[in-house]
Length: 478
Ligand code: BGP
Image (cartoon, rainbow, N blue to C red; front, side, top):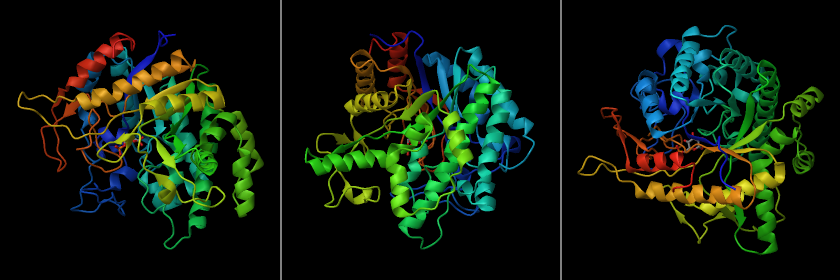
């Protein structure tokens, strides 16, 4: 069995990581706009508003906001038939809680989607990709507040109605499950906008996180339901960050630790897909005595708003060892995750494991029997412009080739129903984790360094022609 004839070959980005124009066209500040660049091992910081003299890499990013026409032409030359991006919530609702949308923001995405469609490129849209309006954090405390459900649903309804004839594929919250691993004061990888009270215990943080996650899941379910009414052809998915967690050895305790660790990270998908909380999580809430605001109406909404497909990112796998106690949700991931000696890692310590992608596809397929969509995969590396003025990036091609091979095996041998593949950051952009430009994923080089200097000119890396060939042959030629 080969890949579907209508396989979605694309590339993935997020508005805040490439658009720039952070206050253009009536846009308000998002969480990403008040986040500094991390450098040399220093983590990114979320500041209280935009402070003079600080470096905010997302403000200009790669200036896609002003250059999208030329860029989309390049995407077409690359051969993409789809383009995954997000709609910056703050372009449409600058503060997030307004009743009326900002027409200039809506127009920008109309123009962008028209440009894509003109070139035969289908937009695939994430509604929230780590870019919550900053006002919703300062005024409401982010998604720990139930009011955020209505704000998000209103935003989603406005854009789904507006683009109902231009966009068919949607995803609600990018990597919704990341928040289970970012219960620190610093949370660049979530959509929740949570600030934890100083000195909060682990348990207090957990309660805040579970509550926020619940409101997001309810908001997502509502959007699925409303979206299907707006256009019954809509395909609305969730988006899960998938890093399989293998047992470090075949010791039974390691195996059980792996099972529980997988539950702790991936229960979000259970709710999105099955429309209810899994027993292992309700048992945990009961055991802990967590008093969460989960109403009967919420449960009904969850059961009505099941997703059509599962979108997920895959970059790496982990391994876990037994920690001498009965494995439960409150294990310490930082201590219990161990290096996997069978795989190599990137410069940023991300373990490279192509077979893990086949494993992940099988895990989702066995558990849910739903169409799957790999909406992020890629290799962050430092690129060097060689004397001939080009970037030769065989390391990137090697990584992607091996992953596409594994994905094809999952289709051919395991019968997985796979909709498409959109490698992450196919045009260089600002790294979400570090805020740097030097961690690059692209087939298209953008001339901008870590200090923000450069012409912003675009050029092709060797991987550009390679991916072109892959798409042209529908994955036959790698
Ligand atoms: C995912 C995010 C993306 C992207 C990617 C790579 O978690 O959905 O936004 O940035 O990771 O991460 P980084 O930019 O830190 O290399």
